[in-house]
Length: 59
Image (tube, rainbow, N blue to C red; front, side, top):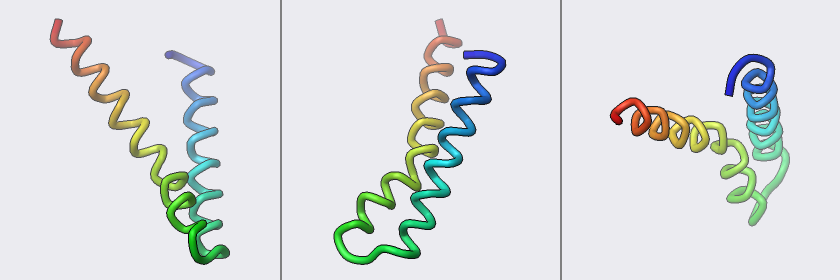
């Protein structure tokens, strides 16, 4: 993934994370777990991509 596609993915993940954080501040109860996963999704995607790049570079 290069160029504009990578930038679009980063922007979408940043907006999803921001919405999750705002939702955590506004919501209460069972929604907290879902919004926490939404806020942490960029970290999970970053870890997944990092491991994929590390595996591809090790070949």
